[in-house]
Image (cartoon, rainbow, N blue to C red; front, side, top):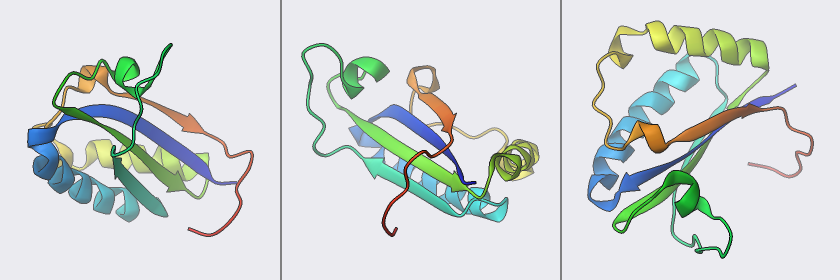
Length: 118
């Protein structure tokens, strides 16, 4: 059964290109190590809520966009092995992150509904 890693993080608008460059490089690594799909979404229609929202969850400030991303793996075993390989990959060492990683959150998910294409 498929397994999905999901991520949400704030990125300064001024760092959009640097983030995109990093995301493309890392996406290629995810695919190399077994992922079947990588999606990075730059927030465009992200409303501010009354109780909670993506901005509060990430402590995003004025001038930061929220990025919503996910990686699809064939199964959790492939994901676990892929992450081990990714962390050991010399190309993934000493990366400068164009965002504050302390405000990023993530998790692994087992799909319970999966309909449609894409």
